[in-house]
Image (cartoon, rainbow over all chains, first blue to last red; front, side, top):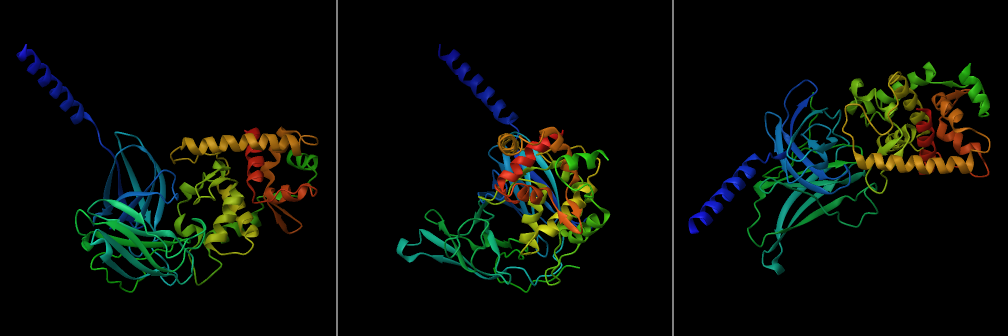
Amino acid sequence: MLRAFVAAIALFAVVLGLAVAGEARTAIAGTVKSKTGQPLPGLALLEKGEIHNNVWDRGALVDASGRFTIELPEGGQYGVHVYSSGYLYSPQAVRVETGKTLEVTVTLVPEPTRANDPVIKRAGFFPWGARQGKVTFVKLEVSDPNDDLGPQVMAFNAATGRVYAMDPPRKVRNLKANFPQGVYQLEVDTSQAPISPRDWHFVVADHQCNTTDILSFPHEPKPARVIR
Amino acid sequence: MRAALLLAALGLPAMALAGSPDLVAEGERWWTQSPDPANPVACATCHWDQGATRGWAASFPKWKPLPPPAARVMTLFQANAEAVTRHYRLCDPRRAAAAITAYLTAQGAGVPLSPGISAGQPVFPQRLRALVASVKRGRALFARRCDACHRAGEAARALTAYPRAVYGRVEPLEEFLERHRAEEPLAWDSQATADLIAYLTEESR
């Protein structure tokens, strides 16, 4: 009796193992390049659902060979936004099938001028004393010469793969409205582990698609340059 | 000749010139050159691949995924007007939008109409459902506003006559509809106008 029970459990474990092993992953993978075919590093950030809905989900660093992969819990509709320093960001609506990897190619065009770009003036990480370090505020000071910032004041945590649209300094009527210049912030739960600034990357795009350079650790902004 | 008769049936001057070369050329200029030298990003800066943009005109009316609450079904002209308002910061986007509409329509000549579906792009069921609802609203609106004088099939065939140049003035269909019944104007940039055109486009297929 016991032998039969053990055999049944073993068989169940084998079947379960095979099922798990056979489960294909759901992902978006991509190649990012310039119009001349040069691979570009940067960020790939996802909105879940309809593109431009500002429901940010997860993302990935785009490596030096222009490759990225973002694993997804499920298929469906996503908005892929790809950023590379010196280039206009590229939005693309995609549909991913569960159990499959969608392969996309993203071609970015350089910004003809940087004069209209938003500017990240500084970034900082501030543990909230009153909560004994259980909450840390990530802050980003942003200006925009055209004063037409949109909701894309983005923070990406490469350690967790999570993407965030940072909270504006004051309430905004709707996503089409011009967002204010000033200090944007994000409240991060640091009760389990302290924040590691090395993991954080920032990028900002305005309503006209003018895009900042990606600001990575040590988060010291440099003058933007035009890519020829 | 047939188009002229149809236009006459709709009460339009027969000298309307849809997609006139001048208008198409003007549209190409708007497409490739920003009117603001200080902000040189033009439509073609990002949308440089004619292979991709060739199918755009045929895919309208369609759901435009603008940030909420602006996302809705739009005509090509309405979508262009929204884009040039935002990117070129034009106070009155209609002339540029009409010319760009003519340019994109000419570029897509011969591409079969496929409202809601762009060649080479994924199909999103939610967007198609929104378009179906728009067509339904447009049908009801046509029955209420237009049916007494116009047959849907005839009106639908006249769609291709727009945007047109009349006495040097450019008129997109949306503006014609706005003025057509002065007692009950229909704003050129409204959802209702997009609904009506979505219905007529469906009738023309």
